[in-house]
Structure formats: structure tokens, C-alpha cells
Length: 403
Image 1 (cartoon, rainbow, N blue to C red):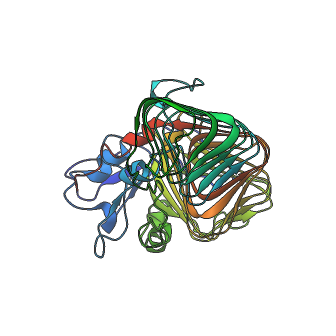
Image 2 (tube, rainbow, N blue to C red; image 1 turned 180 degrees about the vertical axis):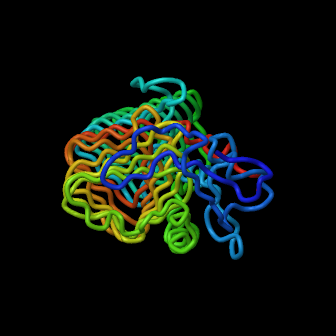
Image 3 (cartoon, rainbow, N blue to C red; image 1 turned 30 degrees about the vertical axis):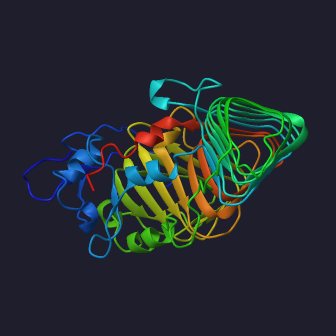
């Protein structure tokens, strides 16, 4: 347990297991302890490690304080996962695409919750119904089936879809012709004078310029780079405090379980023909510079008060089933992927977390249900896609230090 005023902060390790799970998770005065010393703990945050690991203080501070401002993990999450889905390129769907929202802290997911924004820097093309519970910002729309938007609609280009309809609850701003069978806007519709509003019906029609929107920050000069944090924490981490060998999961055969306490840890790679389970019960960051390549399965089990920020480079391949987080509380799992290697997720996988991979395409096999959010270069799916945004992630930085 952490104590104040007794020199270095001490953290009770409730479980660290390779091969088997550790029984008995409660800390007692007889448990082994480890001293966590890290320049990344920061200054100006009183008792930061004790409060953090007791789930009452600020989230993890990441990065090198000597060279750049540190990143608070909670603020990073709430900044990058503001939308249920963000695509740096266009999106194309041949099956239904549905987005809504809920709050895991308020209870289990129920279909049709208000919210769940979508951003597409390119165009959105759909041959089946698209339903967005929140706002939709796109480069343009090419539709063959109805589109319903629960918030506002911003389009940098035309709305095309002869024979189909678009319904927008809020305002709509369209920088192009409206070529639809019907457009119904509950609020104000704005179309520049040089373009046609077509058959639109709105509470008010304004004929004035429409400023362009870029919903997803994907430019190389300004996007978040997970590789920098991975490189720093490959050297500065808390492995020694719990005796964690970085190569512990480089050759996974059979079933292996690794339970990590609160802190920042390094695994050089997670790979092999077997099944790996990461069990997280503390507020944890894990850095994997060699990526993930598992043939059988990967299970990322995060239960309260646990939170996981997982930083990967070198690919993220799980040939079997991937179970990522819990559908009840997906805001507690955040995955950041560096690099452009495609991410292939097999049918039957559970995605319950927030995925940031702005340079990579995400390929989903079969029908896919995501609890959390997706920020990817491009999304491909062979079936229907449903995304349920856990709005709790929007408050993930509430406990971060000011500034």
C-alpha cells in the first residue's frame, strides 16, 4: 500500500503471473511490495503515484518530462476518441452501418442511445442503410439507401443518391448540390448560392458559403505519434519493480496469463502460436514495440478499477479471436497503434475499447459490433458494422493536472 511521507512511494503488487493466474488479489501487510521510481511521475501533482494507483488521483503521465511536456493518459484519450468513428480516408459500406452512444458508468448498453459522432475526411459511400446517432462530418455522400443523422450534418461536397433520402435532426451544411429523392432537415439548411438545394425541406434555408470541415486530425505534422512514447518507455518503465522480463510473451505456446499491477511496463513483443491473456486490475500503461502476432487468441481482461493504455508498433495481428476489454466499460481500454500495417480482426472477436491507428486500415470479417470508438485510416468490413460509443471516455481527463 502507498504511504505518505515515508520516502519513495510503495505500491502493493496484487498480481504478476506468467503461465497461471495468481489467486488472492487483496493487499495485506504481509504482501510483497515494490518501490516505483520514475522521472515520469512528474512534479506538482501531490502524492501522484499513491493517489493514481488508489484510483483517486490523476491518470498516468507519459513521456519524457526533460524534453517535451508530458502527456496525461486521460486527456489523450478524451482528445482522440471524441467520435465513435473517425476515418482519415473515405468509407464504403455494402451492409448496414449503425452508430449510437451510451455511458458505461450509468449502466449496461441499450440500443438507440443519443450521440455517437462520425467523422470522415474523405467521402462516404453506402449501398445500405446508415444510421448515425450523433453528428456526421464528411467530405461528400454517395448513397443508395437512406441515411439518418441524429445530430448535425456537415458535408464538404454534394449529397448524391437519386431515389434515396436523408433525414437530419439538427442543422445541415452542404457545400455542393443536393441530388436526392428527399432531404429533411429539422434545423437550418445552408447551401452556397452556386449549388442547388434540390428537394430539401428545412425549418430555414440559408444561401451562403459553407466553410470546409476536417473532422479527423490525420496530417503527419499534427497527429499524435504513439511511436515517440513507445521509444521513450522502452527505456523508462517499471519492469524492474515487479521483475517483469520484457521477453515474457515473445513465444506464447498453449495458454499464458500475465497479470499487471498499476504502473508503466514494457513487453518487447506478444507473439506465438498460442493464447495470451493480459489481466489488468490497476491503472496501467503497456508498451509493445515489437507488436502483436498471435495465432490462437488474445484476451485483454480489464476490470474496475483497472484501466489500460496499450501502445503498439510493429503490427497488431490476431489470427484467432480477439477479446478486447469489457462491453460494460469500454472507456477503460485505449489502444494506440503506430505504423501503417493493416489490422485484421476475425469474425467472432469482441472489440470493447478505443482504437487509435490513423495510418492503418482496419479490416473486419463478417458482422462486427464495437463498444468504444475507432480512429483509423480506413475501415473495411464484409458485413454490418455497429459502433456503440461509450461517452465516459469524453471525461477521461477530468483528473488530469491543469495545463
